[in-house]
Amino acid sequence: MIKTLLAHGSSDSAHGAQVEALAKHVSNLIGEEVRAAFLSDERLPAGSVVLPLFLGAGKHLSEDVPTLVAASGATLLPSLNEYAEQLVTMACNQLTRESTRIHALFAIYRYSGFEPLVAAIHSANSRCSLVATASLHSEPSLTSVLNRWQSDGVGPITVQPMLLFGGHTLGRLQAMIEDASATDVLLAPVLSECDGFAALIAGCLKAQS
Image (cartoon, rainbow, N blue to C red; front, side, top):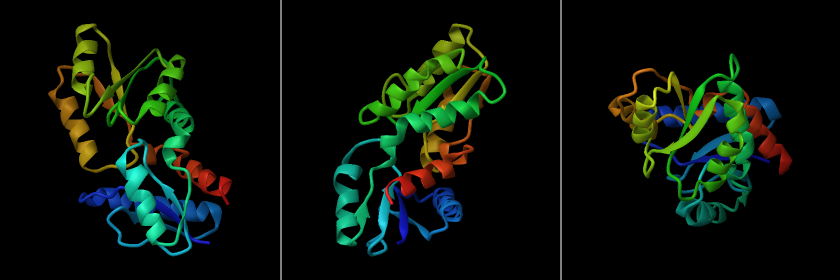
């Protein structure tokens, strides 16, 4: 049975390339056909099982994804946002590989709809010297938290994008870092570039097979 990874999609080609590469990697891990798909697709592979690659709850998950899956005669699996704890653990493992003495700022898309992800981040606050969250589209914003940490003498700062793939949203995040007064800031990779991400996705698919 075909497995489908359903992503949001973007006009930025980097996004699509990363989703396609992930599908190929996961296919190799589970020994089954895995395809990439996007919300803009008119149909998904008929009879496939679909894993939505979304970190937050909202209209896409409640309306757009179920409608597309039903129209395609496919089967919908629980979305990736139900694996918030595993995703945060993976990110923390990557961040603290060399040392736990880091100041980690987790950048999320927004707070509304992303509550499980925020809760998982705060439950992992003992993994680093300092942990906080900031938003790209609400308050406290990434720029404001960076400015506050700079005025408090906190540094160096590692910003962990809680984004699955590159694209325009990552560009917005980078611009917000540039707008901040903080100078000693390291940008960590997006989640799909973290070690163990493809294995986590493979595990999600096998758990539902």
